[in-house]
Image 1 (cartoon, one colour):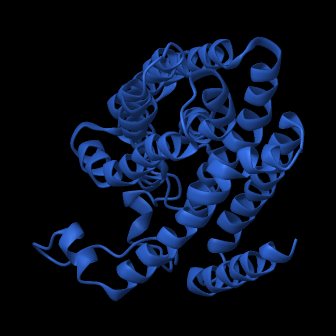
Image 2 (image 1 turned 180 degrees about the vertical axis):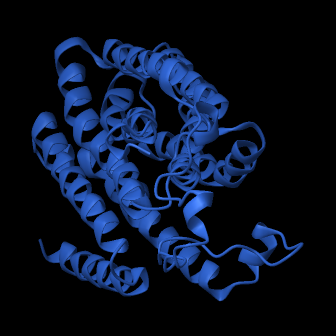
Length: 322
């Protein structure tokens, strides 16, 4: 295998682009809260409720999306998810009623971004990579941060310059453009292009070489006849991770990601400045997720996660005093 030309890296960057635009759309509502309040007269609670619907469906659609990817492959699910995101964003630019906000930015956008989400990155990483899997997962994690880093200030600038409706149309068109590389370049698995997963030994050398130590980033396989989902539900580790990630999402996506910009505007900070400050968090997430993927290939991820959450908790404790 010529690793320099390994096709899996092409798939990685195509999926990176898909995850980036999906995360960008997921982060966009924070920019739209004030324009919706001003133009349509809706209360912040009503707008936040629609955004909450999207976040809820974003999370709940993950297990179903993973099951469908195992059954039909990640490529058709990625095309479906991006199409749904793009169309719901374009239709969201024409809303005049609150139920339309709930439908386009809540239900449809939530389902679409839930498909083109970390479950997609995990599926691609597990299918294409044995070695460098942690790095690949870090790259996919960085896509979410890059989506926030790029989209929030850019969309805020568009809102200020051409209005929120035209800015939303531009965002939807960019999402639909990403369908092109996904359609042309993405493949479901290495066997579709005559390859093995990256780092998997050839059969001719597998018996001669000792089996490599399993990466701590790789999930253990279920026992014979066992269901991965039922096995996960019976695992204390699953519930510990689920609880910690729930807190992570509630504090970042649910509070800071949605309400930071309108809260800053309420306190007299200019719109683009507030969006740029939020983008700094996305930039640091980008660096952190890439570094974390590299570290996960080398160190115990449990210890790394404990360090990450200690730093996160400390930052939240200090936030009220800023």
